[in-house]
Amino acid sequence: MHSNASDGTFTPEQIIERAKNYRISGIAITDHDTVAAVKTGQFLAEKNGIDFVPALEVSTSCLNGRMHILGYFIDPDNEELLSMTVEMALSRLKRIEKMCEKLNEIGVRCDFDEVKRIAGLGSIGRPHLAEHMVNNGYVRNMREAFRVYLADGGKVYVTRYSPTPKEAIDIIHRAGGLAVLAHPGVTTGAMDFFPELVKRGIDGIESYYPGHDQIKTQRALDYAKKYNLVPTGGSDCHGFRRGNPLLGIFKVKFSILTNLRERWESTRP
Ligand code: AMP
Ligand code: ZN
Image (spheres, rainbow, N blue to C red):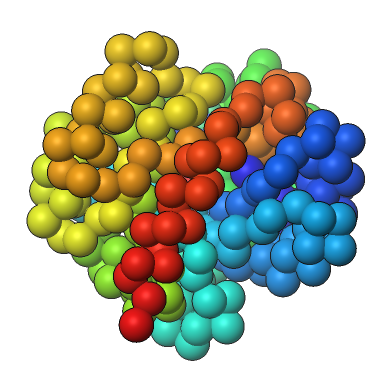
């Protein structure tokens, strides 16, 4: 799930509070390109008897497009991991500033300071810019903001730095974690690219996911079995940013976490 350290609306405190209320046994905060919420989340989870996995979700890019790679059980103090997140954060900031400029150039008023304010402490992204555009009445909703302006191919799209999947997998490994392909069923081309990721050292594939129907879930599970990798799952809860919060609504069996931890322990020196 995502906290307000990236594009979720819940603070780590609110995540743990909700997890407690829904009697969740284990969680991972997997913010986009940042581990800023990990330590607070871990501290509060452990205080409340909730199993906590330090994690993040790295946006990578390759010839096949964008892939999100989850890093589970990473060391949030690992220097190389942190410097990657810093580089990505700077690039995110510059990119959103540039997109704001382009919006103003085409007559769509955009206030970069206001977008930064919406992002708050979070790692700034296009969803924050989209929210600003909705607030200003330039588009009816996020979907329209992306379709017309912000998506790759949209009117003001600007690219940003992201590592390749191989770089992300290697950095996650060197930070002591396991690398897992996120939501392959909803990322164009990701499922077909999976055998390549296996060659590059991926450890698992997200199988249980709100956007996966039975066929997609089964395909991911089949891949996990075929390549002897761990199937994982998650709600991808963004708080209130994408409809209602899924934390506690979309559930994953605890055995998934047990298997993931066993795999992680087997890779420890
Ligand atoms: P960014 O991190 O700035 O590249 O923005 C990526 C995020 O934007 C994704 O994680 C989604 O939450 C959101 N997003 C991407 N495409 C769309 C879309 N077509 N409609 C709504 N949200 C989108
Ligand atoms: Zn993702």
